[in-house]
Image (tube, rainbow, N blue to C red; front, side):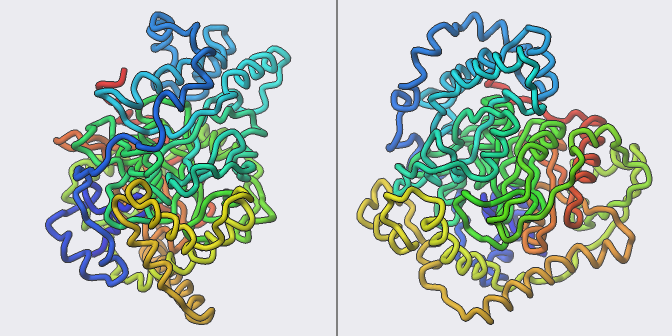
Length: 544
């Protein structure tokens, strides 16, 4: 049994693991993950960033925020905190809010809670200096009835490996501190739909495929991201740590993360949020700093299922520059939620997870809503050379990013160039080392060998789900957090996690739905029914 743990990207074991007593056995049973650290995430070498400071982040916005007082903030809390996007749009259409005020509210919260104080979370790396002016423009457009999409005017944070023109795209790395770029494809799609890019979210550096011995949520640029449900007691998950934390703390209407194997599911689950990892190719990867062109995908992290559907609608689109891009559905994922039902749906529930009370409770809720539950056992299928797939992809894909999507003034063309920079700036650039980068640099294969690795992994990942789904005529599989993220990753299957409660220690847990390619509509509908029946998400206590 191999729950590929809680790596921000995929492998950080820690609090997402079902059964910690098997930790050592699980790690040593696979040569692919034996080099991945199981370091205690609370063993922090660095908390606050040594690269950026509040003064730097707020310099361009300070004057524009001068008219937004504590009194205004308190008066607006009930209208904004934990509200879904349709509710926020309703408040705006009724004149109770404006896009300008909404942006200022989120900025006020970020300034109050995010850095250099006793509740700091270090979730935000940078802010769009033009966002208030852009919000005012949205207000003017709304007067002319130009609301294009439910995401119109909504402030969104992007994981800081996603290109946008307003701010550098750093991947949390000192080497990329000045990586100013054009917009990524999904950034363009969000803007075309009217979204406001509020800023960039912190992440586990290089999407957690860098140091090997660092805690999830750490980056040299952003510092150590902390979980609002337990700042030094609960892991943030990763690698989209800042996106998950920012959503949980109400720093934005929604956020975008990216996943290779668990990097959306893990932080969403750990921060009591909804995280959707789409079918690989449904959302473009162009302009996103890569690990693996085979497995990578962006996806939304939100407070609720409704907002995830809205975000997916806003980001989808065929990208001719992404070789895995697929034609998206012409219908609206958001509008399809009105048809949501679990009547007659058949889900496989893992026997190996039945000692998890929250999982069992969630299954009972699904039954009450009309679903049929079939207990299944995990298929004993390995994922050989998983780490090599990531190594080999990243070596080629990062070089391609530098050539096609990075700032042209950067002097890097290979991963070795970045490693050399880090070695010359080691104290600030790599306090936890760069063990995984070293592994990438050393790994090589023939094209035939690499193709065989990819084919075996995809076949095995698909069999892990397809065997029980076909045998039992199942619509989907039920998991917890990111426990089966690795299998879903190599199968290129979509997965969605939705809050299902909290452990006795207060750690958030997510019920995760997994199904076959391009079943995002079904995943969203199933999760929506469960969410509406349970209303499990609670806001973190100290951040109201």
